[in-house]
Image 1 (cartoon, chains in turn brown, blue):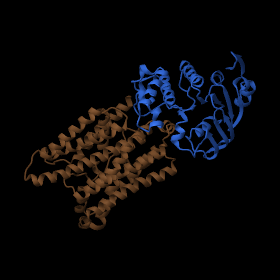
Image 2: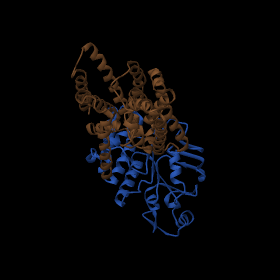
Image 3: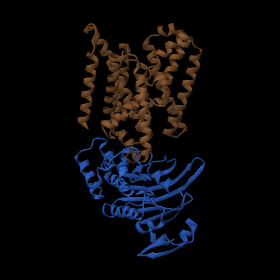
Image 4: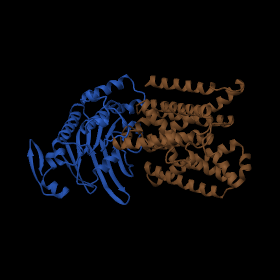
Length: 321
Length: 250
């Protein structure tokens, strides 16, 4: 397994180098830092979403779920839409990006935690009920968003639409640093949980027998997931296009591929493998989009397309197994 | 010894246990029997801290359930779930390895690996150690879980109706493994059983529960008779003694 991880890391380095160097037009002194910022954003987002998905799939014991069922993306777009609705697109542009980032991260994290604490009390920690409530909540948020969008001025609606998709075309270095400051410690904590996650993956009774309290582990993992997804989404926008489908396909693709490339249930392998796979997907995809297809399609649309097919494949395969 | 004092338990409004007082001595196999809904599994899950203890007191050796650390308890008490379904795709060896987790917390040493191999060999799992759990038979999967509990190296082992999905060969071989663990390794085994005949044939002590109370306890020869079947199970069946062990004729 260690060899495969090294191979994945090598592929990531190669893809990153390709992204940095191919099709250079203009001065290197401008290009390198400019591209490095975007590359940094992609690596950070790829890692955060993949790791969050691994954690989420472990605590829900479900391979086809991703954290976006909790309605994170929907909340992000709702916040943006309400701001544009209230202050107009000029007012929106006047808000410092750092403030907007802070609002988004706190909002999304609080939403996730609120949902969780409410359900812990009501449903005795029933994970499936939590997920189902998250889906319904996501639908509610999306409906409110759509309602608001119907009332906005069409030109301002186009502002909302342009920020409703993840974009790596322009990255604010301040935000990038802020996101790293939030997510790197969280990723470290997730890595420290790796052995406990292995045990939690066995199910409630065996985990309890081995001295791990499932409810506590699930709560801790959920806090980490909320922070990771919130920070990544606040940096680049939602990775599931059009306000999010039933699943965030990016995380789904990354973890499904990681399971194929490094077939193991051990989180000491799975976490880095999913993170590397996610980064490779993003960087390679963005290179193709930017350099060869002239940005004619947003990357998220392609991810949705591939992810949708993969989602169906996983469903059918599970049925047969 | 497992000491259970004045334990009451309710699920919602339904009261399941009404003041259980019970001492389970160290060593040997103790079987919990009783009709459906008597509270056997509930009692076992309270000892195993699978359900929160609300009223009463349970101690395992010196550890008080609800107050002691989960990790300390996991070194003294192993539990085996009713269902052996695991959603993670694991190999037999990987599952057995988890038994050492309470001792090494994710960093297995040479001694842990040696104990895992010993457990695999002891339970005849070496030939299938690298097969996935969903590729082996129900009996083999059950045995892998027992091996995991064995690798956990605890003095106590709790099992909740482990014979449920096993055929007669699997059930007998599992009970014989448990018997051997009690006799050779000095383990204390507490097992919830549906079938009185298995309890009578393999257990040292039987505790019969009815309506959330202890109805009878003692050795199989002392308590398994037509009166027990009538009073506790509400059925009149004949009991015949075979090889010193009473067996119910069904």
